[in-house]
Image (cartoon, rainbow, N blue to C red; front, side, top):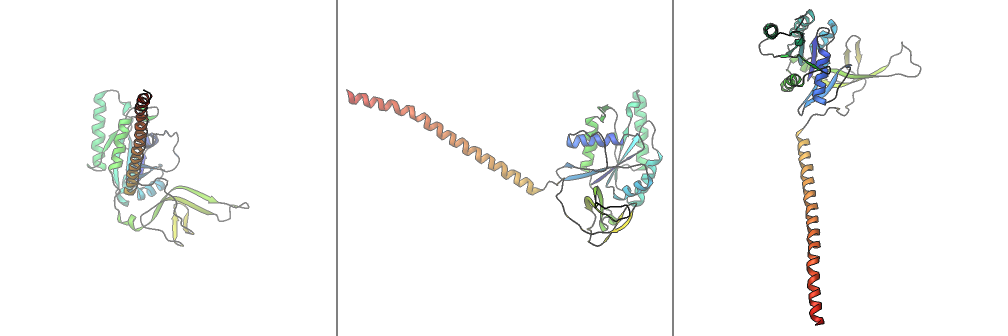
Length: 287
């Protein structure tokens, strides 16, 4: 599932992504460069993308987003970037949407804080709909949001499912996690270079010698397609059976070891009981 985090400048997008990464992987990331793919739970793998405030990037991400997190600065309110992205989502097939209201620590009085929460909740329901949730993010802890607030958003991401949009199912596309160029020693800027893109194929399947459109560059022919090992494999039932078999084997081995140790202990315990009997017989014969 592709998760797009969208918001205006200095609204808290990067902080939210770093908080989610800390929640899922227990690792702290200082900088975010490109896409981030990780496992949310046993049955779900998510790709998190930070949406830049450029119209071309917003159009492309509105086409592929399965879930959108709209980050709203409570001190400023809804801005033009948020309205533009909402209109683009409505035109390309509306995905799942949730909101994150940030910078709530700006309001120090409780009355003013409650009024702002109610005001933005009503406006969010009017723009998006009543079925979508709005989460509150306030305090910071070492550059990250609080664990309880981050866990609520992570739980919502884990419960959502990717919407079935017809034109996406009929057209293949890749959100490239990384790319690599193959240059020779005598390479110049006018020469053609082979480029390989790494990512998950969504929608339908690609074909060799078919055309693919690279956003902002043009159309190109596919030379080769290779299937590589999944860096974030999904959890399957077969894996659960293998784990149970390994556990049962380990339990059987432990029982066998315990039985062997008991037999050795029994043998060691019988030896001192036999020696005094022999000594008694010897004394009787001597008499």
